[in-house]
Length: 128
Image (cartoon, rainbow, N blue to C red; front, side):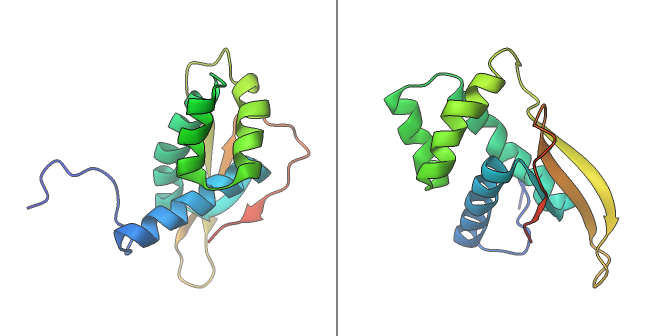
């Protein structure tokens, strides 16, 4: 029985799901806007929001926790140097999900995942 189990499986096993969200999180931190399917976008929000909250307090312990989840030095550096400062006064809701139609091949619902208050010169990157 699957009572009280939260989160979507997305047709993947646990290690594949973990690796996928690790890569998507690093891409979102790097580019600040990615395009993916709507269910993946909604699950990504559950991964990235706690990381940004963690980045508000810059300490060695928090950097190690973030690195354990992201496994990317560049992403952790940007997370703590830029994003943590940018969202210092915001109590949550760092990610916006915008629906953008359906994929041509299989009609999967697509969405943009972007960081709120991002600079307008950031460019979208497909993360499928």
